[in-house]
Structures are given as structure tokens and as C-alpha cells.
Length: 90
Image (cartoon, rainbow, N blue to C red; front, side, top):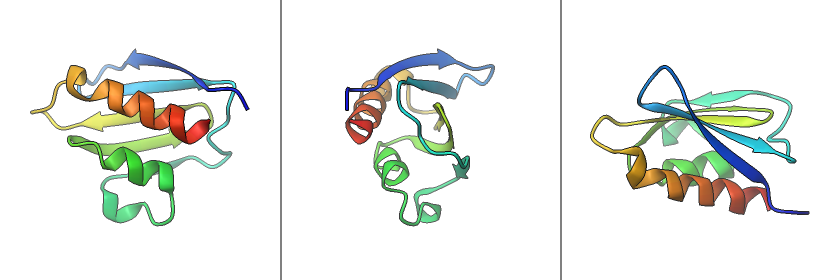
């Protein structure tokens, strides 16, 4: 399988960004998490919550919306998030 193409888009919320994935499905069921304690066996979500400052996730068929803490900048974490998504999706 080829590596997923990931595009980062802003949202109206400055603490949220949409990581759009093309060429790979993230699953047919949407899911949202408001902390690492909620992810259960969702390995991708667990890895994303390992990034310091990630506060919430919405995972849908072709995108992940990541909400970050106020004290963290996107410059601090966008590369790590993109790498984790790309690595998980191959």
C-alpha cells in the first residue's frame, strides 16, 4: 500500500485542525475522543494522544480533526501528528 497523502486544513476554531487523508480510509464509523482514557483499542488515537498538547480527536472516513491545548502551537505538533497518521496508514 502506498503512503497516504495528508493535507492539513484550518478550522474556525484556532485550536483545531483537520488532517485530510486521501487514498486511504480511516474506517466507516466516525469516532470521537476527549482524552486518552477513552480510546480503548484504537491504536491510532492512542498514538495521537501521545503528542503533548492533543486534547480531542474526531476521526471520520477521510479526515481527523485534532484539537490542541491553548498553550501548544501548531508549529510544535503538526509534524508529529502528520508523521503518526502517515505511519499508521502506511
